[in-house]
Length: 161
Image (cartoon, rainbow, N blue to C red):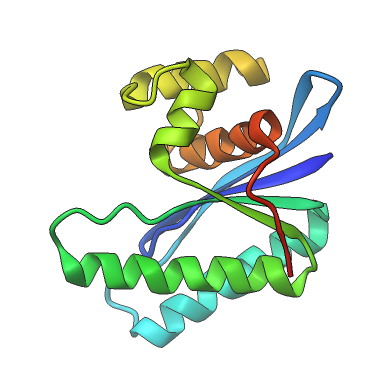
């Protein structure tokens, strides 16, 4: 199964695609989509959508794993990230993928066995599981790969749109 993991963000959206067969992972693609803070909001959202749609069209993942929005204290930031997350959900839905959503706690737990693991622990596990020579940068990219790995381990919460 080919899985795309997405760490939604407005300035940086992490994207990672893995193939999962048996119990083995193969990294296929990983990068981040960035938008400039001086660009109007609607153009930033369009860039996120168009870039993600291109990646999906090129690599043709069957399933999508998207990190659920973690809301802390900044409502404005949460709304902007929510809009970016909406663009990611739309791109995946239009491609006909099975979409699963996971909390940061579920993703951390799937990779490390501990839901309160720190970023470095998760990144180390991404590197090990995928057999990479170094941790993918920026952090958002490693988080997207973690979301894809989480889906392979969970295979739950599926929604076919």
